[in-house]
Length: 163
Length: 136
Image (cartoon, rainbow over the protein chains, first blue to last red):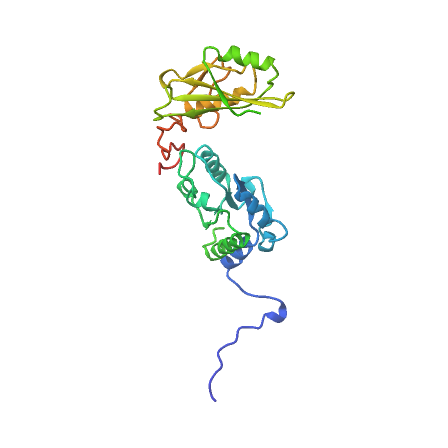
């Protein structure tokens, strides 16, 4: 009684409007429009295909459109063992991508070298290029991949949006 | 069918394989090297194994040629079976066995600038020679 109600935000819903911050809106748009570049070198590729196709359907997460040009893609999926001979190629692909860009290490070989410890294998692609999300597994289950993809979306949403 | 290996002297190898081809062994299925480092019973370090197949007779033969470490050189069989080209390049790349008369004997799996031969038993198994990035 006698209290003054706090000023109410205008009810925008009836006008089909909502308010947000610019960064949040850009993050929301970016996380659901991932153009991926699948850099598939080994057996993890089969699991990548299983995840990408209709059964698990990465298109639900806005990532259903692989671009086979690094210049048109946002996320580099490194799927499979990277050898020292291949390493300069991977670096070059990464350098060709436009900002903002993200990298997903798919499978243990890309994360750490996996069970390889020999003359040929790079011991984790993070020795060459920065990595945002690591998806372990040999190969990872599609559920695991989707979990990694959602973590990447979370990261994209929450980071500072450079425009 | 026989899997028994027969040893051929390396001086006689090329003419021997030519005669085998004339006998109908038209396919060189495989050519690879075994490194017998530290094997007491082997007089010479490397053995090159030839796996021949006759499509007409459906027979398979294995032949071996031994070469010593300090003179790992033998005649190329690319003139007999063109398929030997890449097999011999791999043998050179991985074991450092060279082939006289090969048209293009360069590395096939490893890159230029790689030092040593990766599948030799005395190559440290985890010695890495990265083109970019740290040695780890």
